[in-house]
Structure formats: structure tokens, C-alpha cells
Length: 134
Image (tube, rainbow, N blue to C red):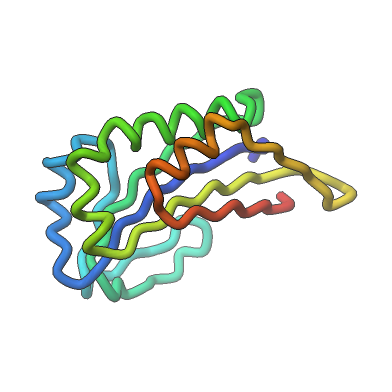
């Protein structure tokens, strides 16, 4: 696998109507239902879902700058906030940016733009960045 970036927005919780959320928001997503078995793609290990979960995922290759990719994803989410706000407030929501890097030195720096910071502040959802040495 080449170096790349993955962005996820997950909304999950007991009682979350994932089908309603999918129809309301209108973004491509994966749906996971409490009690269903899901196999992880890389390990083929099965995992029992503990809650209902809606996941929006976007993928970009290494050529796309981090701020450009993240800005685009946050703008997509920001435009949907009028319909997503109640789900984000009523259930657990988290955004994650995962960056796969091929670094021999295990060092990597990221500088988020002011626009990204403003969008993160406006969306107001827990956000994490993870670096994985591929």
C-alpha cells in the first residue's frame, strides 16, 4: 500500500436509527447494527457490534496534501450539519484522520491550516489524528 490518508466520521450509540441517519444525511456510509458480526478487512477476525454505528469514510492517496484533503472532508460534513447536529448531540460522535507514512525516522509533522481549525471548531466533534508507520 502506498502512503495515504483516511478520514472517518463515526456516529454511534444505543438506539441510533442508522437507516434514518443514512437517508437524512445522504452521504455514502457504512452501517453497522448492534449484535451483527463484522470481519475486519486486514485481519479477518470477527467482531460483534456493541452498538449501532454509522460511518462516513473518505480515502486519499499521498499526492493530495493533508490540509486540502481534510478541508474538503470537513466542508462536506459542515454542509450537512443542519441535519446531522441532532445525531451528533444525542449520540457519540468522533472524527478521525489516519495518515499512513513510510518514514524510516518515525517522525512526521503536520500543520493544520486556519480554515481546518475553524471548521473543526464549528463542527465541534471529538477529533483525533493517528500516524501509522506503514
